[in-house]
Length: 300
Ligand code: HMG
Ligand code: MG
Image (cartoon, rainbow, N blue to C red; front, side):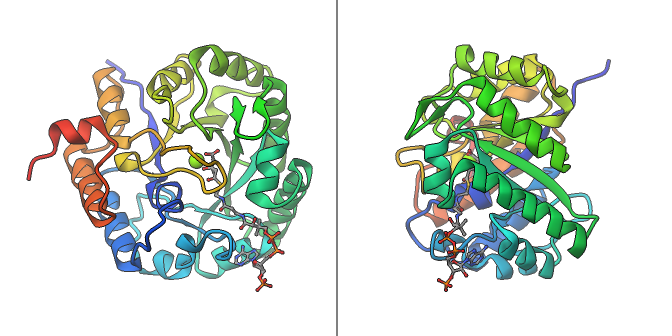
């Protein structure tokens, strides 16, 4: 019997740790990523090449990227906000980058210090430059605030579709739909997806849910019902965004894997190893895990 295969994009080392107030030593990040690499995950977003003035926690990007063990079977994308970030990423040998736009004006201004339109222009510059520096570089796109924005409130589906169309036209192989502040419910996520599916197919989309209101798994199920097969998550439920105050972490990878295996979907992920990786980072940052499955199943 054919089981549906879901690819998980682990964003804990980037989305998870970018918002940590305490300094996380580089060696801990490296050990954490190495543990994640052994779990069977196919994609791990490991760091971001953003301005260290804006996000000091990611200031050790070069060291992290160069020190981790890179398994040939795993992709290690990094997030970049501008050409400067792209150049740094390419210089350390990154094979894949992620660019990020916003469906809302208010969030673009806080997160990238420019208008939403200017943020898209920057992405275009990144893509153009990448073709000169390394035309094999894979580019993934993110759209933030796909159903709600901390500054602008409710976001209309058409605003998301417009940005998605732009990112795909630039050549992003996939666009990840970010519910940055976790406010979405099935009744807001569904119309957003339906509008997108008028201009593209589900295999070009991924879902990226923060779990602030405990709706992430339901919203992910809604995305699965619409044919989406790529889901972003963060082990231990780490994370948040420095420019979305009050937003908590992404859906916990352990909870996601438990749900997907329960649904009979294949992830290729070893849940026990994942739980150990989640436990490792939670201990190191001295925070209880936000994963229910980790709490239930962790054994010393
Ligand atoms: P700016 O201050 O307008 O830019 O920031 P600037 O060009 O004037 O540069 C300011 C300083 O930063 C300069 O240094 C630059 O050299 C330096 P100075 O001359 O003052 O010494 N700089 C850099 N340094 C290293 N790497 C770079 C870089 N760029 C500039 N790439 C900028 C504009 C976009 C750079 C800034 O706003 C920024 O870095 N923003 C990123 C914020 C961020 O990382 N947010 C979190 C990630 S997005 C997210 O979490 C959402 C997502 O998960 C999906 C979802 O949940 O919705 C993806
Ligand atoms: Mg995020």
